[in-house]
Image 1: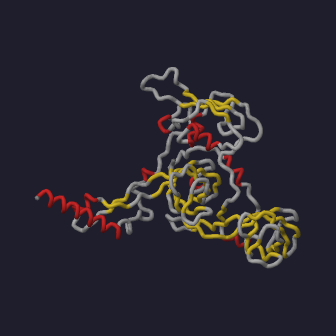
Image 2 (image 1 turned 60 degrees about the vertical axis):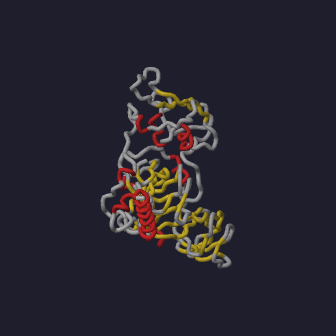
Image 3 (image 1 turned 120 degrees about the vertical axis):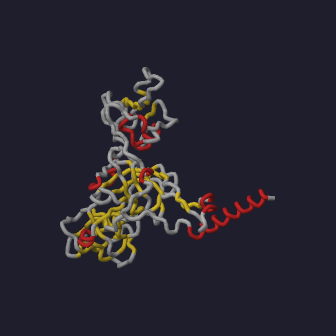
Length: 374
């Protein structure tokens, strides 16, 4: 009977703790702004970069890696690296430096890749095998891209740039939503000749650094392209390509070939990186593979095109049922450690912000998730 009473009291204690946590667990515990993050070590660490001696401890080979692979039309470098490595950002480090083709990022459809280990013939029991990749050049045409190509891309601009940019006064029929093929009238157009193509952007939201509150700029979303037909105080243009809604007041800006940025060199940062996702392009709150994230780190933080970063989400708050039973005040809440949920490959860098493509997401990426070393 005594054992039954103890079991009943223990069960009651756990139940009460669980009930209390539903109403308050995780509601007030946050990392103080500017304070030390107790979970910093979970956000990835700096690994040794490419050298004559490979630090193979940080390179994780894909167990299903093929011995040979023929590069195909439509392949991306990230996709090929993923076939051989579970850590594709170490791609340059497994490249055989002794072969005639020195650039590990210039691959062509038809090239044959061979994967083996540099010291497999002489390795002892205590030696680590060094992975090695060689290429036989049989391909031709255009080199493959680093990342999957995409057409819609965001930009973050300062207020003055947006304010001074040419803008759509109206369409010919003065419609609120403007479609492809319509004639539009543009104010404030400068230094543009007839025939010039201009990208159309819609001013969107202000972006602030979640750590400092500093204004990083204003996100503008791409709507399509226009062609200038006649230059005057009120210029005339035609919408030649509409990717999304175009409205009165949208701005015209010089087009950028962001696809060119997708050929950046995949590599891991050689410095400690800690930052935050401040915006998810084309998503309200969550995002997934091959979508774009904007982070609050840029050139001044030594971010480079091709950097691969890890995306980390905060751990959930849970009830510690053991401590809850010991505590006189009721439920005791504990936060689980952060977890890596995706990789982010940076394809464009400005002074304050950078843009990256979300890769290998194992769950949704959220606005406010942290970025660190991969």
